[in-house]
Length: 418
Image 1 (cartoon, helix red, strand yellow):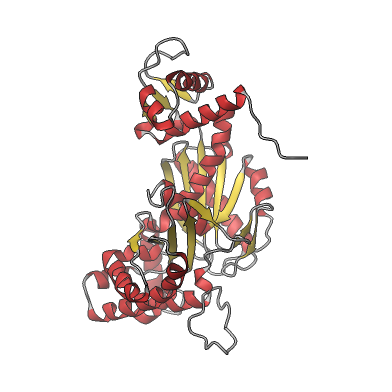
Image 2 (image 1 turned 30 degrees about the horizontal axis):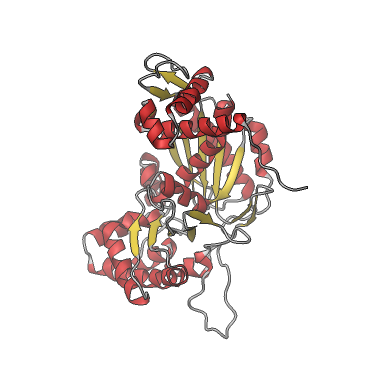
């Protein structure tokens, strides 16, 4: 039986409603005039007013003047009722977990970064996910059972058909864990999952305003782990097994005739070469996981609890960032060394893809222009043609925001069905 495409007036109305709703949600303050929506969607005035009238009857839109009709004068302004519902986005990592709750416009109403257990396992992370979401929902004044959708960003390779993680070296017991069904039963709403870097790319494209349609972009998450997300001709590229962009497993050190070391401690060869743990080692920074003064560790925990938004992959790289910002020679030597290593791996992807634009996100983006300049300087001699390299404005929040965006995209179906 051949595939059939649904057609007819009701399908066209649904498409128009979705287009108008998307334009209204994207408008400043989620408020727009009919003429603004006509310009944003390319629809006629009658089509826009009919769509607004349908959304108004469903309670999704309120009219700040008179309600429009297809024949009458349209309202001067319409407002999307973002407070009508909420979604959540969760960034699951081996060292930290970020939970965010947002309204239907995508505005984050509450946000929290939690430390994962010292030896995270799948079941312990699910438990932390539930308790963290419950606590944040109370803080936001949103009943956890009222969420419209929840998005999860996870390390590793995700099987989207089954909704499970196929490969996740950094989290023991995470692979194959049937967590989605349990979370769906508990929350009573759709729960979606995707690779964390793919969600970071989604956030960068829609929130960070990079990687617009028609462009090719390479997004690199640089933190405890290193991974890449690809946008080719304006569309995300996942690869045949949803494993595209696993930059952290590139091996630059093993002689070509020797057996590669593979994964160690949950990290790939390139992550061990240029990730946050190696920076801490080279800079002589105690990450708190080794033996040391318990009072010092307790003080670090209190500081992180007081200022969770400034934590980077649980490891404290702030002394390093402060040192390179001040131009301290020892720190600058470490920076140059790591930037050179990072540039070698990055060059391999840039030479193959010719993306035109590279965006660096993750905790290392806190290194700012000093770090960016070092990477650019070490990358340029390795390329045949110039490539724009910039830092993500979203930094380590990109995955959680991408998970929120994934949940919002799913929730849009409910809005147009109302």
